[in-house]
Structures are given as structure tokens and as C-alpha cells.
Picture 1 (cartoon, rainbow, N blue to C red):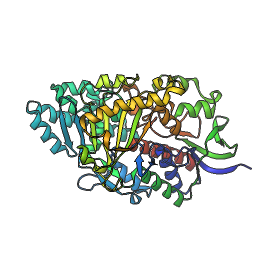
Picture 2: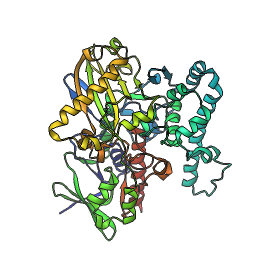
Picture 3: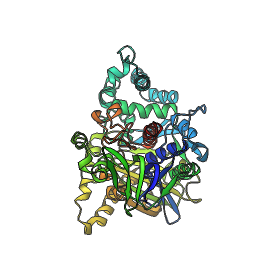
Picture 4: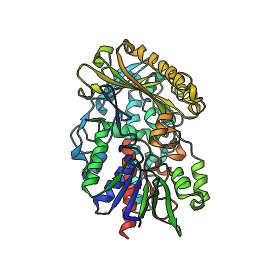
Length: 502
């Protein structure tokens, strides 16, 4: 006889754990199915030698303001009983951007950030102030639009949301060009494109404004015990709320009858019935592979086929036999060659050419306890789309991967002399690695590329085209990243709860 639950959640990534915990906290019976042997998706860690590496987290937004006021993420984690299980560590800086023309480290405070930029670029002072005002005001408008929609208001006048109306459908590059003329200053203000997945000429200004607003309002944080500690905290709360989880268990089918979900079949052929199903797997695979093409409207298939699978990454996980200061790494987040030459750096991601733009993250700067005494952990990240990696013959994969890593190390060595000679442990992950462990097409880290037509309120909704099925995760509103994925799970979980409460 099939086991019965109020809800089944497929995938224990951040979106899935968020949805599952929210539903379970309301007293509903929830089964969480995860094909990996640990929870978290990209929010996990792994060990090599005496080092434990954080898979993906660089900077976490939405925690607390400098005055200790809880941000959106912290408020949600508090509401569902997760926040008090996690220790957050505040970062003093936003990032360092360095290339042949610039070397600046921006503080994680708007006033100090503006002051530093105006001192370096005095002729751009007015533009700098107006730029930051516009990013903050646009997000106020965006949140106002969402609140008005939730309240079913029909007042979306230009006068009420002027900044969004003027700039909400422009690219970051378009808006930046109206305020800033100095190319070096543009370089300093552009590295966060790596957090959005597209270069300034293509990434929505609204998306980049969300990033700036998040980190200037609530400085970036990291997590004691790595992001695995956050995933474990979700699971602890889920268990305390009566939730059930099965690891090493995937789903091969979502059962549908008369246009409504009735449950799932696991890859062990166990049938589970449920009133609602929340899928943290990517929506296209959910519908085509699990629901089945016969139950997937052609309109949905056309919509998904019009989207572009987003970029993945090549990561070098490095354990050094010395403190990070030995090689001159004194800032947590370092964008190497990712300020200028951005378009070229992004375009290289479609090829196997050695990357020029690298994200160089030193975790011990924020958390001295991140690795054993006298050592440090570095993660180097390059943007990469999966297709070129698919074309590599299996017998050449390791050699190609290692040569690509050598190219990344050359960039790192340029700015951090001595890097190579202090490497004790190194592990290389590619888009193929990401795809293997997450199941995401192309090993995508942010879901589909977040163009103007696929971001903000135009991103995929959480309600699937089958009654009782909901999507969670980076592929849906509000998009990719840790805080957005958790938010997507909360929205999907809330929608599922609404269905259960009827």
C-alpha cells in the first residue's frame, strides 16, 4: 500500500529545504526526497586531506544591517526556526577588484564606499551618488510593486514607481553609462555581474540593483561551519517539525490523474501519494521527465525552450600550507580581471580558452577557523558554459581539465605570487561535476540566464501547469543565488500550503 503524505518535496537544495521546512512547521506531513547522500545542493561542503571546502557560497546577503537590524533572509530563517542554529560572520568589505588598471577594495558600507570612490574619482562624484541612489530607489519601487500586486491594488502609475518605470527594463550597462564616464570607475562598479550570470551589456539593471541594495543595506556575511551548517540547520528544524527525509533516493515519476498530482514514484519503485508536490529539480526536467510530455502543455514547453540554460563554473578548491597573508590575500572576495574586459571574459565561457577573469575567494580572511592553524583555503572560480565540456572525449577529460586549471592558476599567481608553491591540496570541478552532483542541465548555478525577458517579475512562476505541483529554486522568481533560492522555496512552500489549507 502506498505511503501517504500531505506533501512530497523533490530535492534537498536550498529551495527544497526551505519549502519542506515551511510546510512541516505548519503541522503538515512532508516527505523530502534527495538523490544525493547529503542535503544542500550547492550549499554543501566536502573534504580533501585535512581541508573542508565550501562548494559554492561566497557572500551571503539578507542577514543583518550594521546596526543589527535583521534582513529579509534572517527574518525568514527566524520565522521557521533556523536562524538560531546558525552563526553568521560579518564581512568588513564587499570585494577587491584588481586588474592592470585598478586595485580597489570597497567597504561594506554605503557612505564609506561612496567616500572612497569619490576620493579616487573626484570628477565622478555626482554620478556616483546618483548611481547608488538609483539602485536603492529602484529596489524600493520593485518591492512596492510586489506589495501592491499582493494587495491586489491597480495603482501602478508612473508617479508611484518612477525609478522602476524609467530604469526597470534597462540593462546594467545602459544605466551605468548614464551616470559614469570613467572606464576605470565602471570596472570598479561592475564585478558583481559574476553573481548575476551575465555581463553589464546584458544583465538587467534591476537584478544588479538587487545585489547592490542587498549588500549595502545588509553587509555580506559568511557562515561558521560553511554553508553545510545552514543546510544542516534546515534539516534539524525539518526533523523537529516531524518531517521525513530519504537520501540516496531520487524520483522517476510524478503521478497525475485528471490534471492533478497524486504523488510520486521513487527510483526504487516505491509509490507515495500526496496532495501537493514541490519540485526543487529544474522545471523542464520536472515536467518532461517526471510529469511526462503527455501531461505537459505545449505552451509551457515552448516557454521553457525559449530560455537559455545559464552558465556553470570551473572551480579550483585549494588548500594552502600557509596563512593567506603569506601570498598577499587579505580580502575575502577578489575579482581578478573581472572589472575591465568583462564582455570578453564572459564570451570566453563559451570556449575552452584559458579564462582571464577569475573570482578568487579566501575564506580564512572572514573566518580564521575555516582551516587548520597555519593553513588557508582558497577557491578560484571561472565562468564556463557546459557545451564545450560536453565535446571533450572521455579519455581526454582529465588532461583538458588540468590544463584549464593551469590557466586559472597563472592568473592567480600574477596577483598572489607564491600561490603555486604553497598548494598542499587542489581539486578541480567543472560544469560536468556540477551537473553530476546537482542534476542541473549544463551544471547551471543560477538556473536559466537572467536576461531582461527572464528576470524579476518575468521569471518563471512557482505554480506549475499541473494542479498541485509547484516549482522551487533558482529557476523561478526571484532567481539564482542563496538568498533568492531560499526565498523561492518559501514562496513555493507557501503556495503549496495554501493548496493544503483549502
